[in-house]
Length: 451
Image 1 (cartoon, rainbow, N blue to C red):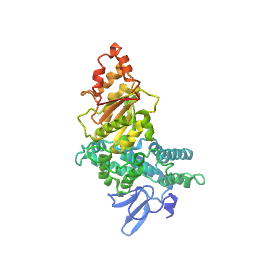
Image 2: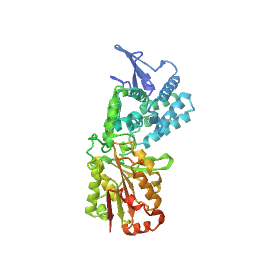
Image 3: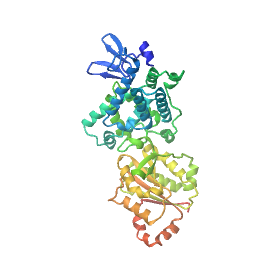
Image 4: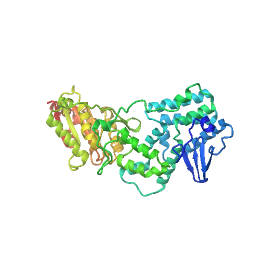
């Protein structure tokens, strides 16, 4: 027991936990840091590959080296260790393995602790499990698209990675104990550094804001993102597995039902065409119906709502899902309309993607990105849409049958100004002539607000 206390650990009973693993070769349970090796009715304490009777500092260095080698062996899930918190974690291991100066080790652990707190995860293990659920692997993408093959090499690789990540999911108290073991830390440091906890409630509890009814995907398309509490159930299911590799069927089920990446976690997104293009999470306002009435009258709002709902449900595949909306009173806050639309249709699976007017030149790349999530329904919102020959040509090109625009995405453009005045001005330029007809033919819904 004294050896456990020196390592900052508690002796564990029963099945091994997240910081332990089963050694098939020696038919024994091992734990990272200090290892309970059970044979018959007796047990003794040893470390992986060495006896804790040797110099403790050397034991910590060896432990850190083993974990670093394990992290370098990942086959599909390298991305899990590329976020700021994971990089700070491996930095601590590197400093421990090299026997770096105490100040450097303490500073590295402080960086890890701060990054973990900023991530708003309750623990390092929770962060790892969240990254695993994000599923940025070919296996996860195939499951989300509904094209997953039978058991094969990728399944084996994923299973191997899950067991490696389980070994890396040290409790903060274990890592802090290692730091304290090799360096005399200041008074009170070990107790303060041994756990993080969540700094705040989730700011984006989308499912609660939507009045979410989503526990699982139904039908052919992926429905609303899960709430943080619902995701916690999945994290607990995987993290509570005897071996994480045994939870691979659960992971495949999660990706199949809820998708992968940011799209699986957020209903409101924004597109940036720079650096090859990327989706990011976006804030979305949820206000009362008064905001809707200030922009569009009841009948227009109901028409917009029903048009969007039909697209998300796939009940009217023959009609064009795209919409052009003329806003004659652009001083009104039309974002209230989109917040309300997401609130109403979001639980059925709508993802709202903001496309800034300055990013229209990358609309083809956006289409290719959305096509990677064929079972998710997107409304791409360009508000305001700037009338020009180049912007009209970009939309026509993207929405043409031979373009990159996927069938699971609808484009909504909001033109600020009166319809007749703007169309007349647009047609007055020779470069624009002949574009209006093909452009309007792309939109199944056309509305005039505030006129």
